[in-house]
Image 1 (cartoon, rainbow, N blue to C red):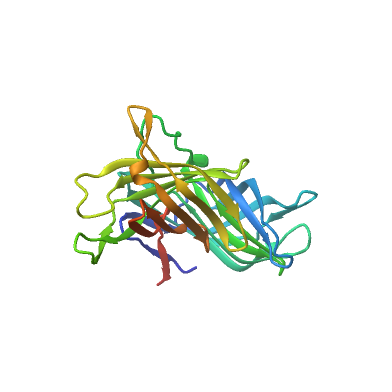
Image 2: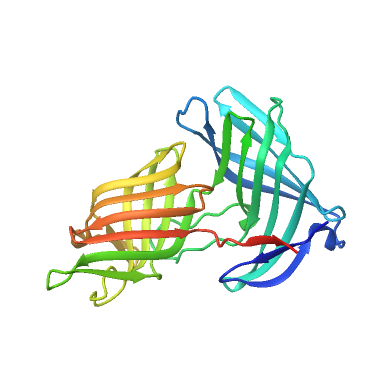
Length: 308
């Protein structure tokens, strides 16, 4: 069996092995909670969004893993599946001052579900390389899945359904570029990689809270704002992915557990789109009629795999 080599920016590789390289424990069962977004590719309606328990069973002797779960295709139509044995590889990294693990597996055809449809183009990273937000008194406590294992999984169920997983509390890091008018009337741009964006979803109410950390929109700003909170934004799901939007939002700043509204930084508009495998986001916003912001980044540190 060919071994996979992982490469990641921002994380140091501690160890690397295919599952069969570790014989100390022959099998391991990992239950992982997450959320599934199931898109009907035929009717094009709103996706089904549901909490899901996926069960991962790793066989260290054979270097394989199986994945099983239940998928609600509609309110009265649920299917179950257990994949074939999938070749897997494990990488352990020093990341965010701790050891974290990634288990990678994929297959063009991973098995057949209970409705006789094939699992096609199956890809899964069972990863612990997720970014955490700062703890700020008064803000919602950060939530994370079982054992800090995020199932970044996507596959087709036959020709009719696309299944993707996500977690409803994600903190994105990347690059923010802001454009704004200078004192001489010219347009200036400011690039900042320190701003972080946390999206907290209320799936039942279809609302979201967006928290911006370490905000500096212009080079001339005298100091960085530790947090800016946008509440009660609209949350939606489509065949493209997940989106959050709002307009004329007066944000709050939390200090000492107390929220203080700050109309000086009113968000005239805010739009966040999470597409593809739902780990990346692009955001666009306009603040106080002057600052136009654009962000692109991810809540998971991606690792690439290459055969040697």
